[in-house]
Length: 305
Image 1: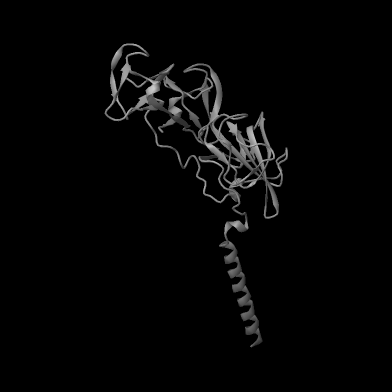
Image 2 (image 1 turned 90 degrees about the vertical axis):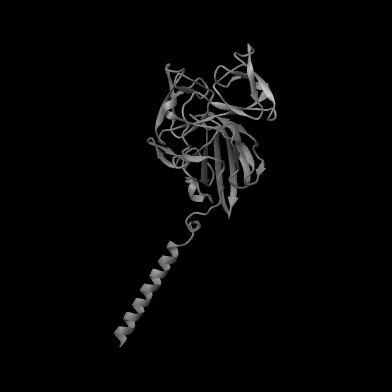
């Protein structure tokens, strides 16, 4: 009977090992990496951690409009708040979490709201999304370092492994396509419904008629303090609330699109696919995305706000 007893023991050990493996496989991901940081801004993931165009990308990028709030991913002390040639407006925050020192980096912001040495809480405003420094479009570059930041970024780890929220990619959240009709914003008449506002054939020119209060109209051009709302109709900016459209570069992440100094003009630079830009005008099949940069409308999805 002894051989059968030994065989039974071996079988029991085998079952126990399988059970243990099953438990490990179903353990929360926190065992491999803890969810200790919150998402620092709104927007979709437009560039991942790792190799990008043959170079190492030591963080992740969130595509978002300029001015979108940026928040501290965890409580800590601001270790740096400065304007960098590469990072642009950047904030570094040092954290101690469960005895482990971390440092997070928030880069390319349009503005900073904290100073070096300041203590911040998780979720506290530290700046706003922008495109400063070595950047080709409005986004937040976010890094996590297990240990302190160093010039070689040897402590950099993938932020997604330590974030407690689901992050969607820009490709998964591609905005709904809008027809290219030459408009790049909207105005809403401030006056109450039932009241009218004068409109003119040219800015400050001949009276043309009236439009109703409370109604919204697409914007096709702007001259001084006047908006063109189509059909050669101009309305004074004092009487409307203006909302600027955003352009989403409808091209795969990791690829770039040419932009020009003027519509059909000379080449200026290239911008990344799946990035967001404010739209400042439209002319001859090109959108003006600011800083004397015009991008073919065929590569842009305009987002109406």
